[in-house]
Image (cartoon, rainbow, N blue to C red; front, side, top):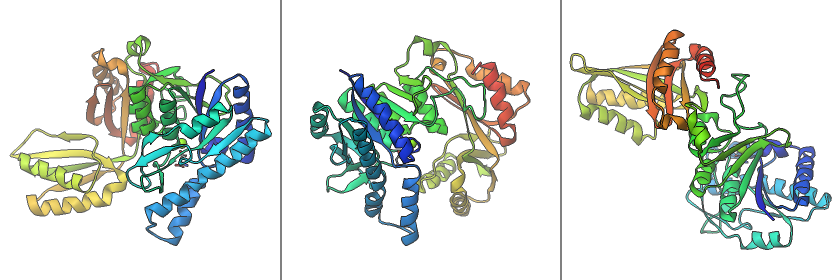
Length: 401
Ligand code: ASP
Ligand code: MG
């Protein structure tokens, strides 16, 4: 008899009807003889509404109290799910994060799971109950309720599967992982499988159906994850170790992000002290810099460009104003209409010429790029947002995505 962890996100349990439908699906699965641990998120937009309530009472709500509040969303859905299961004639019990033994450490609102004491959960499983666990929450050393960061129910599910040494199924409102977001490229293919490294890159590029940290845990403990539509129609996608078939193609997926802006600083006196000073000032204010490029020195000066989140524009300008006071006259220009196009594939490790092929595609389509960065399995290009759709179609078509 196999044990399986199934996770249902907020949209899958948004209404009582949906909870009923999920409960009936779970009870059929149990009838097949599997032992099921179910992790659920809060219903629909509950977490957002709770956060809004907190913010309207207090502009800077205490993080401990906020965790106490937002963890209640999941408590509502576990109890309702358990009742719906019982109504199906399926024995079940709901457990909060604390009751499920989920011990966390670190800050409120972004705690990490340190360990899971499975004693209680296993006792219930051995009594043949479906165990419904609240996602997104745990308890710290002080006995306070903590939450794991937005989207953290994925982490709860994968961590439970790691500890139980079983597979994890994530049911959501998309039916799997695609080579390209099908809303942007309708002929995109659904992947049968994708390896952890590729999924991590895709998740951190914002194409992630799953929360990034949960993929890290899956990779670390070798948990096989299956992502599929919550109704169970259609085959989903497996996230697992890489195999030969994955390595044979150069590119597995393509993703676009419009979240960053590009800052160009002209007239920087060419001196490593200056350059390091600029980036240290940005780092000290926690500005998350992604791509960096620098022109060759001309007349003792260089021009530096980097990308950073659009949401940090104001603070970047403030920092650079102060930098100017220290290192002398510079010109700062901000471009907001830029897009990051990334191609990801484990095959790049062993195949050469992928970057050259993309350069060639962009050149033939007369698409200028401003920056390029590469990692072992990813190449990203900064392009003008106006070229975004053309670039996506050209690259996706040529690589048969
Ligand atoms: N309910 C939490 C959130 O909205 C956790 C989750 O959905 O995974 O972020
Ligand atoms: Mg989610």
